[in-house]
Amino acid sequence: MPPDFGGKVALVTGAASGVGRATAELLAARGAAVACLDRRGPEVESLAAEIGAAGGEAIGIECDLRDPDAIEFALAAALRWRSRLDVLAHVAGVGLRRRAEDVEPEDWERTIDINLRAPFLLTRAAIGPLVESRGAVVAVSSLAGLEGWPYSTVYAASKGGLVTMMRSFALELGPRGVRVNVVCPGGIDTPMLDDLDEIAAPDEAAAKRGRGLDDTLATPTEVAATIAFLASPDASHINGTTLTVDGGATA
Image (tube, rainbow, N blue to C red):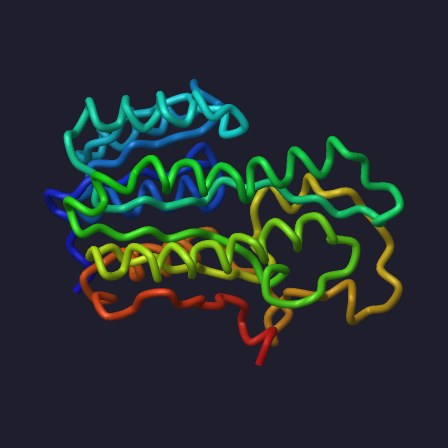
């Protein structure tokens, strides 16, 4: 039986597309009221309307995660909509595939701001309501956060930092009843993958980095299901862990 999120409130970042959208839809289908955050306001408002039409509860909130004030405003808006928070899913992220010598300071700043600083600021701001609900935080990192990754020095730094930061949050918040876990997918079939700079890999192995043993990519729904599991009561004794969803790539 799927985990029941009836009466629970979830906040999902990056909800306009890809894994974020799949996560918002899945949590809503399982009974959660979902606050859908994304910088693309019209798209998350449309998603919220679709969830409502399907019998669920959702609100779309425009939020630029590079803006600390916008993060505070978005959380406040979610709490005004529903006066509790049970699940915080950090799904928003940006990729960067570029030779190290071609990385500009603004590339570093944008990647770190969205992939690392924003999850810190939002988690910090949400501690009060999460402690009150004995809630769960799930962050989406990457295999690049666990091992070296070609042409991804900045991206790997942001995702590796996310893994250890969330483990540290788990140690700090676990005694207060909040679980914090991380999902590390390999390659995912999402629009973000198409947006990465094309660089010829030096060999076939590097070109297939992150693909499953059967040479496939994960789907957004498969990653969303993992997020929902870690946020659910079924994972009540799982805290401070990192779960790979990679089709055996790191076996």
